[in-house]
Image (tube, rainbow, N blue to C red; front, side, top):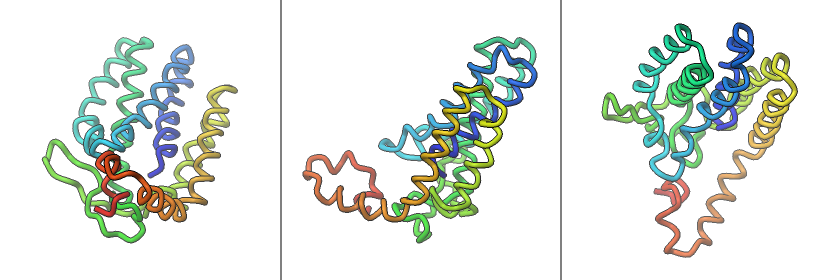
Amino acid sequence: MMATTHALWGMMLALPVLAVAPEFAPVAFVAGLVGGAAPDLDLYTGHRKTLHYPVYATVATVPALAAALVAPSATTVALAVGLSAAALHAVADVLGGGLELRPWEGTSERAVYSHYHDRWVRPRRWVRYDGAPEDLLLAISAGAPVIAIADGFVGAVAFSLLAVSVGYSLLRKPLAGVAERLVGRLPAPLLPYVPARYRGT
């Protein structure tokens, strides 16, 4: 799924905070955005393995949510929403395509690495690839309520993420070819720093 989809779903997790404890809503929205997007920071260092923890992040969410309910504060709320968003990201990636440059071809059986099981979880391909129409629909389904309910700045951030999502969805398939051509022009010493899928390995 698109990083923007994950970020928007993370922000949507902050909406209950806005409803019941609005004083913590700003930090909750930031935590949801960061927690939803952060796992993809491993894009160049073991993507969907280094920072993706579908089991451990989900388990860690339980005490974090309990702490936020028992002792609500900016810190406990941020931790609960941020961890929930990161866990949702890792679990949701299982529903998408594999790690190949063109996931719509269905050649990779690696969706997300489960450190608990010490193996890769296969992609379910309910969302065929990042930027697919169904991915964009998920982004809209999370972004629309945030835009409608949250205040001006948060709504503007969500709207911007949706705009990027639309643009990326329109360009996703052509971008695969552009990436291959750009990588083909890189000097050889730089190639080890490029993700394997861009190098055709």
